[in-house]
Every structure is written in structure tokens, then in C-alpha cells.
Image 1: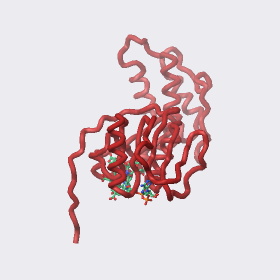
Image 2: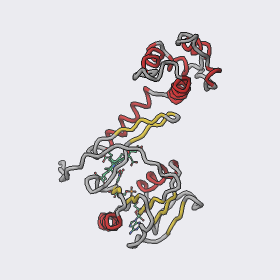
Image 3: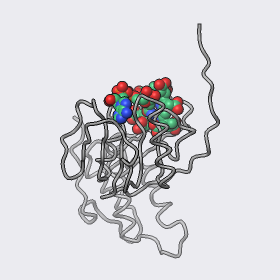
Image 4: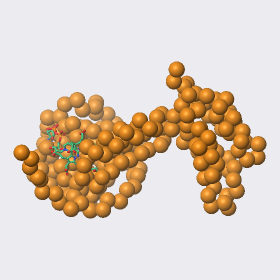
Length: 232
Ligand SMILES: C[C@@]1(CC(=O)O)c2cc3[nH]c(cc4nc(cc5[nH]c(cc(n2)[C@H]1CCC(=O)O)[C@@](C)(CC(=O)O)[C@@H]5CCC(=O)O)C(CC(=O)O)=C4CCC(=O)O)c(CCC(=O)O)c3CC(=O)O
Ligand SMILES: NC(=O)C1=CN([C@@H]2O[C@H](COP(=O)(O)OP(=O)(O)OC[C@H]3O[C@@H](n4cnc5c(N)ncnc54)[C@H](O)[C@@H]3O)[C@@H](O)[C@H]2O)C=CC1
């Protein structure tokens, strides 16, 4: 027997990347899901107030993390830039969302995408490169699986590929007035197998590709980039 659950229509969410550095984010509920949100917030350099009477395996409180070991109370969102309603109790999550709205603070409800002001994607990071997968809250399991598939195709070398692309961009190999600045150059490098050579730690191979660039090309050394050691 299967049961269909009623599904509310979700808004069209607008994707953006927020700077949370030093900003206060309040997470209510420090269970498995709350701790996942917490980990992402810590990584982004946010200040966090976590509220939960019973959470275990919470990272040690410090400058970035204040842990209030008690149930949520109205007023806990004071001063917050973002709020996360992450308890296993829909009534509490609704109360957190209500306080957030009263105060004009965007809120994420882990139990209710359509009642959230923002939701979180599944992320894959390769250095400063970020792949985010989202499905409007319709199947979180699917987007996590797709993120894992991306991980198979885009290994750690892609972080270095971004470093190389960024260094080439700083060198302004093509005139600024060309609207597709460096676009063609990168296409050519990728088509010629740049990522594979980076993955193999093949410095000479990457230099051979960089030598083909306009104005005599350049080397990894010129770009100030060292390749991570290749796989054996
Ligand atoms: C709306 C949203 C709000 C939000 O949390 O932001 C939301 C809501 C809900 N998730 C539920 C279930 C699950 N969520 C996951 C996993 C993740 N969920 C994440 C995001 C989101 N989840 C937002 C939508 C994003 C989008 O779709 O675009 C990820 C991507 C990011 C993150 O959490 O940081 C993270 C992967 C992290 C990673 O692997 O890196 C798994 C799988 C697992 O845990 O392995 C399951 C079980 C399988 C399943 O149900 O599919 C339930 C039902 C709860 C219940 O039935 O009790 C709700 C409530 C509802 O349906 O509204
Ligand atoms: N968005 C997502 O990615 C997912 C969301 N969910 C939803 O998230 C909810 C939470 O899931 P888990 O973290 O796995 O549950 P959990 O049971 O591990 O954690 C819930 C936490 O909420 C705390 N809590 C309960 N009442 C509270 C209160 N009044 N004040 C402060 N804290 C309170 C509990 O002490 C507990 O630590 C689930 O019930 C489900 O609806 C579930 C899976 C994934």
C-alpha cells in the first residue's frame, strides 16, 4: 500500500549566493537536519545561535556558535539575518516562521518548502567552484543523487581548472572590448583536455596547452599555480 501526501504549490525560488560572513543566523532544532544546516553556516563564516534542549554532537560553542540548551521561545530570532526552523515539531517550526515574518527575517522551514522564504540546494564544491542542484523542494533525494553523479564527473581537478581560468582572466589574453573575453580560449583548452592533464598532475602537458595561447602563451609558473600531485 502506498499513501499520497498532499503537496502545496511551491513558489518559484530565486537562486542567489549570500555572504553570511559575521552575520547572525538562528537555527532552531539541532537534530540531524539542523546540524547539516549548521555545518554549512559555519563554513560560510556566519555567527550562529542554535536553540535546542536536547541536541547532541553539536560542535563546541565558541565565538561563532552560541548554543542555547533549552526549547525555542518567541524572541529567539532577535537580531537574526536568517532563520532556520529545523525541529521535528511542525507547530514549533510554524511558530519560528511566524516570528521570522513578524520581524522581516527570511526563514527556511526544513519540514515545509512552500512555507519557506528560501530553501537549500544540494552542493558539490571543488575548490572555489560550486555546483548547486535544486528541484524546488519536490524531491530532495533526487537532487542529492544528482549531486553525487556530478561528483563522479567533476573531480577535485576542477578546482585547479578554475584557478587556471581565473589566472588567465587576470592576464587579459584577449582584448577587453571582445565581449566573449577569454571564452574561446577556455573552450579550446577544455576541448584539448586541460582537466585530464590537471587530474594527472601532468605539468608539462598543461604547459604545452598554455603555450598555444595568444602572445606566446604562458606557463603554470607564470600563473603562479602548482598542480596537486596526480593520481598514481
Ligand atoms: C524544501 C527543502 C527545505 C530545506 O531544507 O532547505 C527540503 C525539505 C524536505 N526535505 C525532506 C526530506 C529529505 N531531504 C533530504 C536531503 C536534503 N534536503 C535538502 C534540501 C531541502 N529539503 C529543500 C529542498 C531543496 C530542493 O528540492 O530544491 C538538501 C538538498 C540540502 C540541505 O538540507 O542542506 C539535502 C541534501 C544534502 C546533501 O546530501 O548534501 C533527504 C535525503 C537525505 O537525507 O539523504 C530527504 C529524505 C528523502 C526525501 O524525502 O526525498 C523533507 C521530508 C521530511 C519528511 O518526510 O519528514 C522535506 C520537507 C518537505 O517535503 O517539504
Ligand atoms: N529539509 C531536509 O533536508 C529534511 C527535513 N526533514 C524534516 O526535518 C525534521 C527534523 O529532522 P531531524 O533533524 O532528522 O530530526 P531530529 O529528531 O534528529 O531532530 C529534531 C530536533 O528538534 C529539537 N526540538 C524539538 N522541539 C524543539 C523546540 N521546541 N525547541 C528547540 N528544539 C526542538 C529536538 O530536541 C531535536 O534535537 C523532520 O521532522 C522532517 O520534517 C527530514 C529530513 C530531511
